[in-house]
Structure formats: C-alpha cells, structure tokens
Length: 533
Image 1 (cartoon, one colour):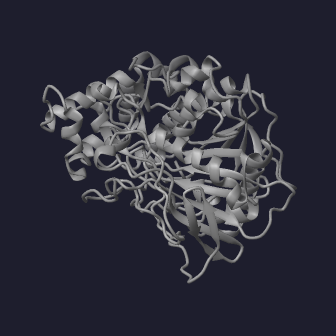
Image 2: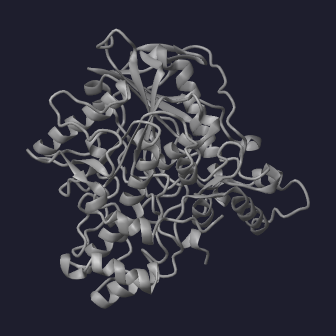
Image 3: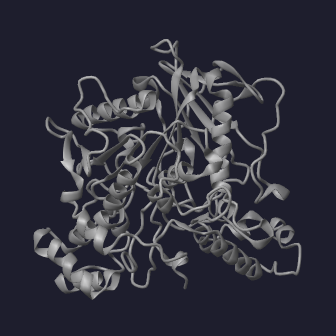
C-alpha cells in the first residue's frame, strides 16, 4: 500500500462542532457585486453566510478553475451556511458527505461604525483538515470581529480528489483548492468595503492545512496583491514528518509534491476507475458520480499540494530560502505538543511500551547514527512515558524547528513574529478517547478555541483568549501584534525568540525556541530535505 494512502491524517481538522446562526425574520442587507444578501444580527455583530464566491464546480466544471458566480435577482437569504465540500467523516465510518456545489463563504462583521476613521481590517480564514476534510462554517469568529473590530471571512475550498487532482489532460496539476482560495480573496477585494472592511488591508490566516495554504499563497505568483499580511498556525512551509513516525511502514509526510507526480497518480487512478481510453479521459471521469471518487484512498492520495506549475512554480520552503515570496508581514507559530494529537490515534495499534521500543522507533525514523544523537538529547528517563518522549521529539523535528527555520528565512526580508501556544490545560474538544500514557496537552489545533467560539474556557484561559484576540487583530490592523497592556512580542529578527502563550500571571513570556527545542540538532540531522523532487 502506498505511503500517501497509509499515512495518518496529519492535518486532521480538529474543529468538529457546527454552530448555527440565530434565525430572524429580518436582517441587514448588503449589495454584493453579484446581488444583495440579507444577513442576521447578533447584538454586537452581524453574519452573512452561504454567499457564493464562484460558480459551482459541478458536471463539466469539475476540475476546472473557478469561474464567477451567477448574478441573482432579488435579495438572497444569507442566514445559513452553504453546503460543505465533498468529504468523508473525520472520525468513524461513513460515506461521503457534502456537495460539489460548495464554493461559499461567510462574513462576520461588527455592528455599527468602525472604531477608527479607516474601514476595518479584513481577516480571511482558510480551515484545516488535511486538504481532504473541513469547512469554513464551523469556525465562529465573533470574538475576533467584536473584540478586534475586524471583518472576518471564512471560506470553503474543494477537497481531496476534487481539489488537488492532476492528470496529463489537465496539463498537470492546476491546484484547484488553492485556486478556489484565490477566488475567495478576489471576492473579498471586490466586496469587503460593502461590509465595512478595507480591501487594502487583508490578512490571510489559517491553521494546519489552512496554514499550508497561506504558505503556498506567500510563494505563489498568482496570489500577488490579494493580501497584505499573513498568519501561519501549525503548518509552516517546511512542515514534514519522518518515515514510520506514527505507524510502521508509513512514508515521510511532505505536504508539497511535484505536479508531475500528481499527474502520474491521476493517470493511474483514471485507469483504475475504468477511464483509460486513448482520449476523453476527463469526460469519462466527469461523468462519474461523486461517491465513486470520494473514497478514502482517492481523497487522501490527492491531498498533497502540487508545485511546479505557473501558480506555484517552486516548492514553498525552497522559495522562502531563496527569498522568493511576497513582501508582507508574517505572524507564525505552533502549539507546544503538536504531534500528540496524531500519535494518540495510533498508539493502540503501535504502542511504545518501553525504552527498547522507543529506541527502535528512532532508528526506523532517523537511522542508527542520528538516533543515538537524538536519544542523548531526548532520554526516555526525562519524560513521564516513552510516548511523551516520542511525541516531544517529533513535535520539535516536524513542527517547531521547521517553523523557526522558516521564520529566519522570512525575517531576512519582512517583519516576522513567532509564537508558541503552551497551554497544556487547553480544553480537549476533539472527541477522541483519552490515552493515559499520552495526555494531549497543547496539541495540534488546541489554540483554536482561544480565537474562535468553539468550546467553553476557564476564566484564566478566557483572559488568554482575549490577549490572543488582541494580538491577532492588532497584527491584522497594523502589521504589529501589539495589544494595550499586554506583554510585548520579541522584536522581529531576534533568532529563535518567540512569545509563549499560556494562562496565568507569567503565562505570556518570551522564550528561546531554538534552544528549548534542540533546533541546532534538528537543523543538522533532520532538516526536512524533500525526497520527492
């Protein structure tokens, strides 16, 4: 079985709650470029949901770049989200859900005039989900809108085989998921002012696969001029995991792959689906029902972002190293225990019972020579369990140090701010069964309830959420994450210095990320060199 199919869902969506908008017979009306929409008022803010930003990519439009949405007559109701894109359930069994008619976005805007003389900053959120699941509507940004006085847009984009398919008849792998996101950004540029936002002050931000999307837009010539700041949460351009990290035989995870590889995979998939005729392969594939395409194999096989075409000519991490990216301020960071979320899902099948199992994993993932060096830096005796030791070194190697490495490349050209979300008491809203030997701590995605309304927070955590909301929206407004009365961030350009975010009197403080996470070791021994060239 191929590595793409067998690998864990590394960028699994961790927001699993759908919170519906309050219904009301009347609401504010905004006249967009395609027609007027009626939203809903919620005291201090208004929502406009299910607005089409591109034509439905259905039927003959499957695997075509997004076209303009059709105009509509009369006032369109925008009181509920549009359909989610086709995907499989995140947890447990089940068939495909969602629709190919899914290119909708949602706008949350504060009620009343902006606090300052200028229009409000606009923040455009791209959701996570490994590029094969997730949707924009599960993220409620009312805290960002109200406390931060910002207009927030959340958008869907095509997923899996529908969003990242490639084939020689397509000329390679156009990257429809990223093209959908660019269409949403163009919609924002045209319509932001109508919702009180500033089209000349747009911040694109995302977590997990959404963060990888932001990374791609930073290095994509096709995205030039569509945004003015970027926030990258737990998915840097250099994110990668070593082979056998989570399950035996699992290959190296690299989110960006050459377009020719994607096109070759597409030709093989077409043949397996019975569409291997000499010509008209795409016509054959477009005639198939979506359920024939939305299989676990195809949805995950086509969840890697292709590069090598005109929209994304270079692997993003190499583009950063070469200084080929858009000159906009960047805020980026990770959680302290990223990998625990993924490792917790595989420990039952592949436990790490003792020091010998721990050492064997290191040798499989890094080779015997590097394993000895790694074990000296991460001795199992220094951790409560071997599973925590393994999760700690994988988090450092796969997320934290690659993010700091990217921060150094970005910081040579633009203001760059780094953070580490460190609240190991953050609420677990994933629905996963507890794993005694591996508490989730500050796992992948656990910062999200501090920015979006997802799950209740304790009092001290709510104060941290207020600080983080202030930092994020100040950055969107000015390019500097400075909140009144809050601890200052390390100055841009300070190597490895990041702001650690946790509750409590001293919870927000500057730390030396490179030293705390052994980044000199990882830069030498596991720099994330791409194997798929």
